[in-house]
Each structure stands twice: as structure tokens, then as C-alpha cells.
Length: 100
Image 1 (cartoon, rainbow, N blue to C red):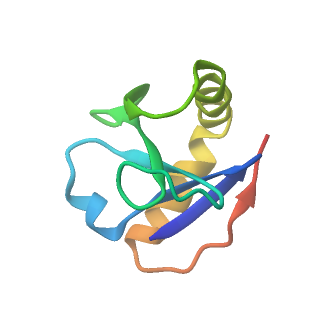
Image 2: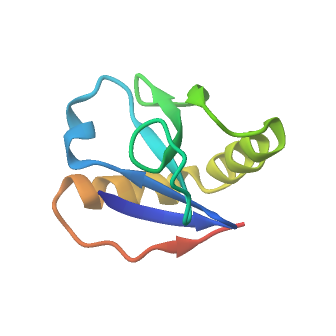
């Protein structure tokens, strides 16, 4: 798993296999949580469609306010997140960024 960013108590990450999916997305992991859909993942959020910014919640176990916080951060840091995702997909190690 490629950890990209830390937003309060959530980690945004991608998996190398996600490179093959038709839309770019991030997995949201709640730090320290054992409750989850898959692993510690609590949401999957699409961040683009056909190369254009389009942020949509695919599924989520988050509260509405948590979703909004994460969507706002993704929107604000969209370019940087895409750069980090490219680095993970290229097999490079990335340093987790703390974003607000």
C-alpha cells in the first residue's frame, strides 16, 4: 500500500494494483481502527474521471462531516495527490504528506 497523505486521523492511500483501474481513486484508512470494510479502509473515493478532476465517494463508512473534510482536502491538494499517486505507481517511495 502506498500511503500518500495524513488528514487529521485519516490516511489516504493507493495500492499498486489500483493502476489498472479505470478511474483514479484513494482509499481512506482510519488510523488505529480495526473496524473496516477491507483491512482498515473506511472509504473509497474516486478523484477523477477521464483524466479530469471529479471527486465522488464510491463507498464510505465515514460520517457526513468526515467525508466533507476529506473531500475538501482532496480538492485542495488534488494536483499534489496525483503526483504522489504517479510516484507510487512508478514504484517510487513517497513521503507521507500531512495536509489540512
